[in-house]
Length: 126
Ligand SMILES: [Zn+2]
Image 1 (tube, rainbow, N blue to C red):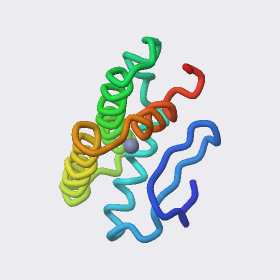
Image 2 (tube, rainbow, N blue to C red):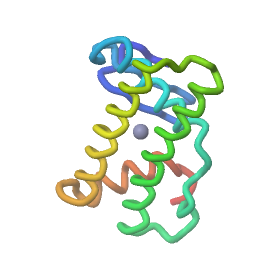
Image 3 (cartoon, rainbow, N blue to C red):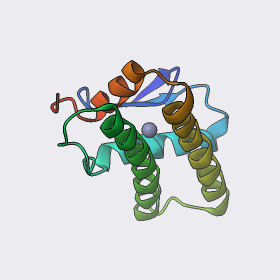
């Protein structure tokens, strides 16, 4: 885990979870960390072994971003570190960040960017 990163991120090849040092408050920082840990423990995408295409990459990003939030919260429960304020913040961040991905997938982001994000999940598949 790299706590000095500018952003949250999960880098499978380096086995590294980064966490924004300037995240808005401790709760958001925990939420971001749980989400990235969620990526690390999520099962591979349902679509990972399909032929790479824009469609495949887009559904994969939407699927895996959702899964990471879901798995992150399950992890928090397994670790027994949940409490109401954290759950509130977690669900808010989940909604906010997942929305950002959905917006990017369906409105702004270039094919090459989607491909790069998708590729990060399955470095061995292309
Ligand atoms: Zn993510």
